[in-house]
Each structure stands twice: as C-alpha cells, then as structure tokens.
Length: 59
Image 1 (cartoon, helix red, strand yellow):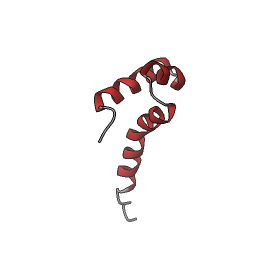
Image 2: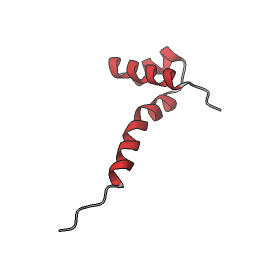
Image 3: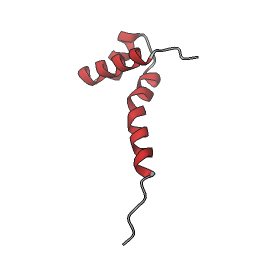
C-alpha cells in the first residue's frame, strides 16, 4: 500500500526544486526529509540503472 500518491510526491519534489530546501519542503508537506530525499533521487537512480544496461561497443 502506498501512503503517498505519485502526484503528491511530484508536487513535493517540484516544491523542493523551486525553493532548494529539503527541510522547508518537508515541513511544508508534513513529510520526513528521508522520504523527500528518496523521491528526489528516484529518477536519478532509474536513469543510472538504465544507462548501465547499455552494452559498450566493441573496438
């Protein structure tokens, strides 16, 4: 069961990107900084894992 909707997470991350403060964003949305930090990093981890699955061309 998901406690927070995808829309809620998206809004929190956008808010963080706008004000550049994890603590203020977490306080504003009533969430922990740990949750926010995970949501901010989630797209980065997905992109990194997708990039690592690309085979290197042979010389």
